[in-house]
Image 1 (cartoon, rainbow, N blue to C red):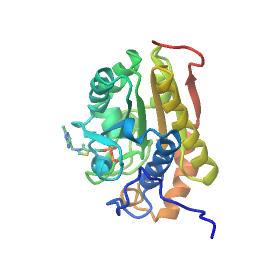
Image 2 (image 1 turned 30 degrees about the vertical axis):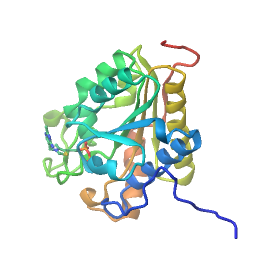
Image 3 (image 1 turned 120 degrees about the vertical axis):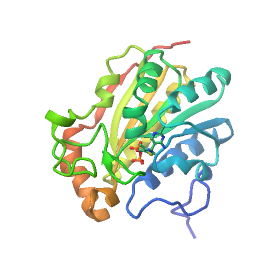
Image 4 (image 1 turned 60 degrees about the vertical axis):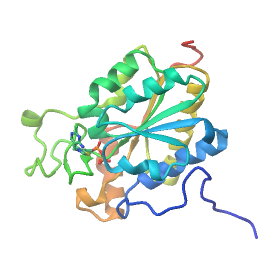
Length: 250
Ligand SMILES: Cc1ncc(C[n+]2csc(CCOP(=O)(O)OP(=O)(O)O)c2C)c(N)n1
């Protein structure tokens, strides 16, 4: 019988703790497919954040390190500089990467650190119960913006890829989504490109993945995908914001 579906070898065969409809599972899977296809599981070191993916070290078969909240790019910097032949990635949420960890994110990009950042943007602090994140949309109701985010009071959302694309150290800044099969394929290609960039020593590569949080958005998994497509993606356009082709930071 033909095998049409297999769990990637670098994705550990356990149940995850994620909520029904959460897109972390899809992102874990495509990341592991890339690791398998490049044959680099034994040479890859991931850095976990604080947030819903805090226990991703239980799911990825490669070596994993746990970073304090927001500090994953700083930890990854040290790991990569000490082990230049290893592939090093971080896996971070929007609270982790764009609030408490803004400095680490921006400055690892300015330094052109040769690391991969997988940035899972679900527009909320998922793990702690759905507070406003830097990427929460204007008008979005959260635990800490019960009348909807008001830019006059809480400021405007951060567009991370656009911001980082202005920095010379950034090799790749691409925003993708996991709302549909074609977009999931595109997301996987972007992750592959980020890892290839690291192999070619091109510097800092970030792939922002627009994702859902059905539990904290108060929606069913299907409604959450529709909101992602109809409200989130128009505010955060998909695309390649920076692609430093052909340059080598070595
Ligand atoms: C130093 C520190 N400050 C605050 C917290 C509480 N905390 C845990 S997870 C989290 C937010 C995570 O949100 P995000 O990065 O968006 O990830 P998600 O849970 O949505 O995947 C916060 C504020 C903490 N653990 N450590």
